Structure formats: structure tokens, C-alpha cells
Image 1 (cartoon, rainbow, N blue to C red):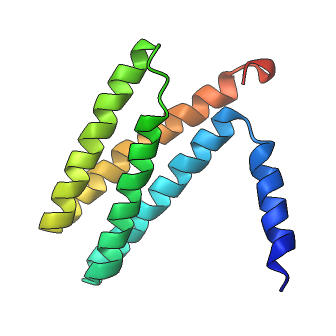
Image 2 (tube, rainbow, N blue to C red):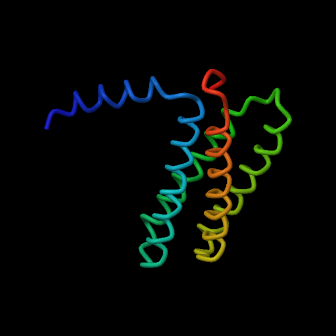
Amino acid sequence: MDMRGYQHYREDALSTMTQGELLLLLYDELVKRLTQAELFLGKEDYPPFEAAVDRSEAIIRYLSDTLDRRYEISRSLSQLYEYFCYELSRVKVGRNQTELARVKDMVSQLRDSFRQADKSAPAGGR
């Protein structure tokens, strides 16, 4: 299979996405990685569990780093992202399924809120 065509298609798709769509893509990936972490933890397969948690933390740090600090909501989101990273570090060390599910639920709710906001935003304002 020629991967160059796929790579070009992917780059084009990403370059034409709105900021809201890119944000949702990141949140979808974050939820996917947290789901993978849950599955690997349930199987007691710890190396891929830890890798999924590490990738989740990297996505959260990226989300935090890209916040526009001029807005008040950014401070709240920054604190929330810091909390997520803190909890995930505890989840990784303690291998705590309950806490992982709680963080995943919170991230999912935040993603759904952003999805709803993106749908409500006027097309020109994205």
C-alpha cells in the first residue's frame, strides 16, 4: 500500500479542520487512550497500560500548553488539566481502575461540552 497518498490525504484533512474540530479530535484521542488504559489494566497488561496513560498525559499537557491565557476560562481549564495529570499519575502508580474510570468520565463530559459548544458556534466564528 502506498502510504504517501494516505499521508497527503491526512495532512490535507488536518489543514482544513476548524479549531473546534481539531480540539475535538484531540479529546477523542484522549478518550480513546484512556479506554485503552482501562482495557489493559483490566487484563493486568501493565506496559501498554502505562504507555496509554503516558500518552493521555502528553495530550493533556498539549491541551494545557495551547490554552489562550488571555481568557478567564483558560485558568480554569489549566487547573483542570493539572488535576487530570495528577490523578493519572496516581492511577499509573496505584493501578486504580476506579480512579481511571472517574477521570475518563470527566474527560468525556468535557469533550461533550466542547462538542456542543462547537455545534452552537456560528460557522464564520470558528
